[in-house]
Length: 330
Image (tube, rainbow, N blue to C red; front, top):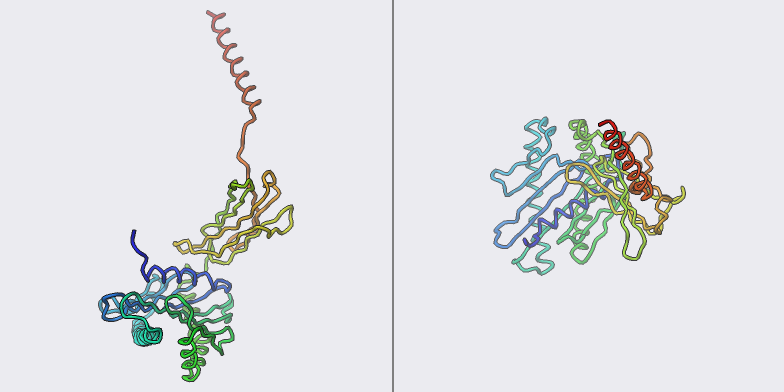
């Protein structure tokens, strides 16, 4: 079995990030990733940009003549000047990211053998009318948060001695105002531009496919799990009710997760006493549905034994009658 590497960890972190900021109607996120592996003379730099769950552009320093490339068909509408500008920005981020990684390795007294990873994540949310909802920035080293821009976009939260040093650098170098200006301005403008270019893809909604499963637990109780699959966008509400009243006891509601095909999936589970399953209903609300959906577990249809016996007896009588008639006729 292949040993997980730093890229596996970063893909996991990206999957988590792509579900953390689903509260807004639409959101844009940029991932700057620096990876230094054993034997590499220079760290690899990767930048990927997402609108909602759709990757719209990407850059990889490992590629020959590395340039920013469109990752969504609708981004090919952008002129050559846009790609030249984005390539220059990616190269600038590559240089600064490598410097930060070297500083992190030195400050943490890491040896030059082994894997070293640095991740910078930033983006913005807008409402359906295009108004700004929130912005975020986070710098992580080895998957651990080192520096986070607070929700007010005016202050920082640092972790550890290295994080504190970067906080001081950001504050004294005027970077706080720079990030605030970017998140409130250029980030929102880019997001709205993407929504316009990719409206056929980004401004649609897919209703969830729903069903309820039934699983008997070892101790005798029953787990009812309500599933919502293949929906878009990610905003969805799932609740359980008992006799028409909200039921949160022993309920599991994990985060919404990308399905890997541009849609999302989610489930809500509740533990119930055996024999009381039909008292529980699952309620799903999503913009792709014509209205709130109510589901319950449907027990498998079984035919009573007495009905089977009656059917066998009637069948035998019919067959016997036909045989007697044929014999009489002959």
